[in-house]
Image (cartoon, rainbow, N blue to C red; front, side, top):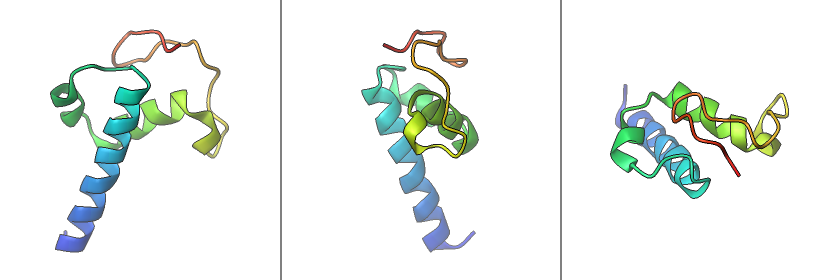
Length: 71
């Protein structure tokens, strides 16, 4: 993978991590760093439905990875 692509992937992963932390789904940044890009995106789309192709799911469901409710 080229330098540009690695940088783009790293930035997108950081975007998802920042948003998930803002949503209150995880307090441990290091734990989120271990997730794959697909796992981060899936959790983000689950709790931020306006930015998904399918419209996402309703708020109030629990995260599959953190087992915490989203408020």
